[in-house]
Length: 345
Image (cartoon, rainbow, N blue to C red; front, side):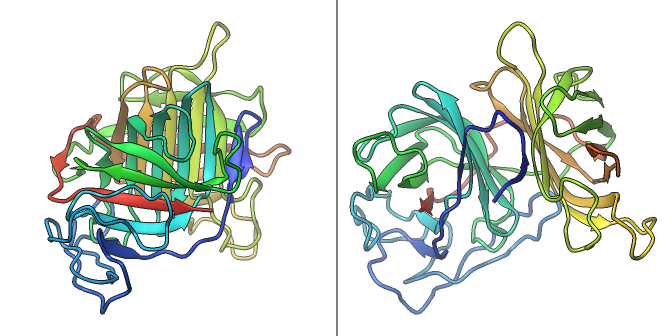
């Protein structure tokens, strides 16, 4: 469950489901084939693999065409050779207006999905994915790079417990990426900086960003949501894992959104037994939109940084990143196989 959520998050959904990986067309558990390694993401390990359920999940691996996943009524047919991840808990935020919805979903093992789908979210409707980025779980066979959903990507409600209304958090879903491509931090610049000034998690608090990324620099933001403790914890195992910002405006909707995901380790400067107010960051990813909620989703890499939290009431959160890259945009290197991620209640 997300913590430190600001007042403008519309829906939270947390439902239990198992997780697994299988090639498309699998109709029963098998012996678990080999999984092809993917390229390393920002700070992630390359070549990570997980057991399949019924055959090879390597890129381009053959499977029977036109079959559906077992046991899921209404599940769409997947392209031959698809790598199917999940089902995973539908865990995160859903927001938007009309038929445009942004899905901001957590995945296991530092995975994440942030994308926009357009259309009526009802079982049987296939919604085009118009922008976004997806990071699979670290042990998936497609690796830990961020993925561009690519041309033809869709978001499809597959089951519901309330067929009389829009799905929202009441459906199972399938995210199909038939032409997904991979974004890599390898070879990118590490000379940039990005820092958000301290701000509290309250509606009128503001933070100003200072960064070498021109599209984000000098803008006034508010903290949209966080994952992790809201005030300095005494238990060092309680750590922040994500912070999101949206632009503060007085004359219309915001046009800039920034989410920073990371692994946090209590700083050595924090005395043992004292509340933790500073963390050192690794495995940092920055994903953002600088041209409205429907605009192109881009990413930045960073080599590290710090996250601080004051002991005041309310506590103020700030983040400073080093070794920041230039912006990285889609498309990336196209994967050999379609990728499907299933989500369940």
